[in-house]
Length: 220
Image (cartoon, rainbow, N blue to C red; front, side, top):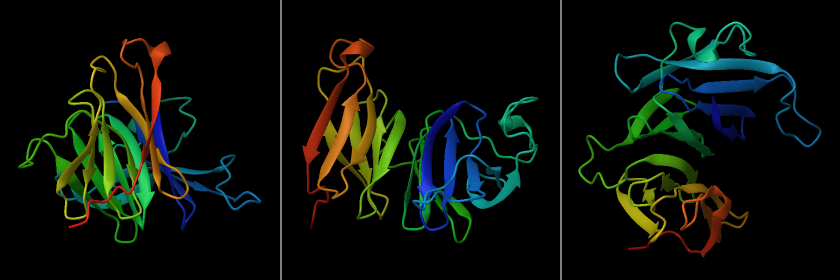
């Protein structure tokens, strides 16, 4: 149940979410890099995360998945100590951390690679401003703002700022049977792209892609 992947560009590791209620958070460590310096996907070690501490947050331990091709059993069940994540969705890397969403419990997470600590950036059941719902894809801006797209809800892209406050950036009107997908910046970070998967008709053949010109940070 592969969903999304992000590259830790410092260590050349890949982090992968899994779209199922008992899905894992995975790390792939390649044996080699390509001639262009990217992770070589042909061979390496697949690991799954265990979070210690008894709650959703804590220190992460990585366990090697014995059968990464899942020929005998789904990868999420092969390591009994692994921690399930309820419907993993979007993921991105920024400045030593990996952020990802889980739609089943409407949470946005952040994993600090150096300290190996996992924290919850947003949880709609505990937030004082829980207007971000149906979390899905995400992308991180150069300022560290985590832009989260909604699959339903108010069809917004909402920024989680570094102080964990929320800022709605945009909202689609007339797309009630659709979802916002694939937010991504251009290489200069001056343009934001995203799509309405089913457009205004609700038909997947009528998807629409939008371009938004920045800047994207609201200054005081």
